[in-house]
Length: 528
Image (tube, rainbow, N blue to C red; front, side, top):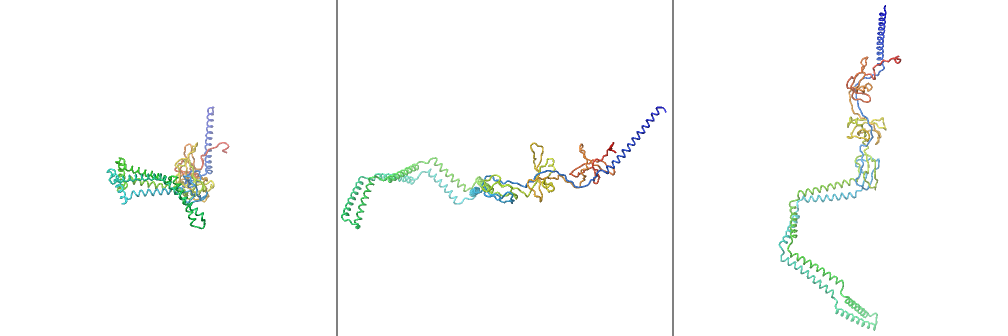
């Protein structure tokens, strides 16, 4: 055998050996894969697709608030007369909580009511038909005004002229009489009167001396006649002396003053009579005629108003005044009522800001409705779109974390809440609280689980059976068919913290393998 043939044989042997090695490796890997598949089948957890009910939810935290809270206030400062409640008291709708002073406001109401009565009476007068007496009075006023104008334009009768002249002459006569009385009073004392008084005094003195002389000759205290004569003589002397003194003193100043005053008054009356006489005889002026004509026009207008009734404008104005008066009464009544602070609803008193005798202003009493509690959440804008009014929810209190309270969404705020310097946007969501025996207090922290969606009779698999490809956004499951396992793409829907809805890809009853089931060969010590 030459060298070339030996080389070919060696190559053939080597080829056979390589082929055997490859076949052996293939058989080994095939056997190993079957073993691994068998091991995986024995070790992997399996689940079954089933028909069930699923709810999707969002979570948020908030605080417990009262159904209502109100600060009852007074607009104007006023004195507190009585306080009927204390903090913590429970009250019913309409209960009187505080009474403020009403004296001044009661007077205002009485004035407003009286003004309303006057306005209503004025309106009633405008609406009523005129009485016969009112018509007669208006007609008489018109006739009188016409007569006055006629007198001005037609002049005076002889009798009217004679009467004016008689008045003037009487006034002048009174002046003359008063002047004469003043002269008489001023010149009442004459020398002859003084001389006569002096003579009368001398005679009285002489008579007194004669009586005294007779009495001294025959003094007798018991002689009544003699004693009376002596007293009378002395009285005559005193009276004569007084009369003489009065005459010597001149006329009485009071009498002179009265006479002068009487003369002045008489002169003033004469001047007035003279002025009236001159005015009476003078021709009427344009102003007098115009004034008389204006009186006629006014009297005619008054009569026409009675005959024709009130105009539409007058009735409208009067009705407006009545309406305004009623508003004033209502305002006064409201102001008076506001001084009695009453509970607008049943609830609990949380603050009493003033005591009896203090001057109150602004909020005086604070009240909450503690029978209708609610939870106010701040929900992220990502979740708020899936929340609707009437949606069910469950609530757990921080104080009692294991107790669930049924709830319902009652209000969703239309505007967002933002914090300066933060990009977080939230919305207030109000939840009602169902009846519970838990002693829940205002301000407690509550955690809410809001059910955003709920479906029944849908195909579900446990979440752990879903494989997610984050890079492609697709999902799959490991479907077991007889002895083989196949990765099948699926379309998912709702999910909660346990199960996921399957919209397409598998059927009810399909068995799924949980986890990664693709076998991988290992070499080296780890494979032993």
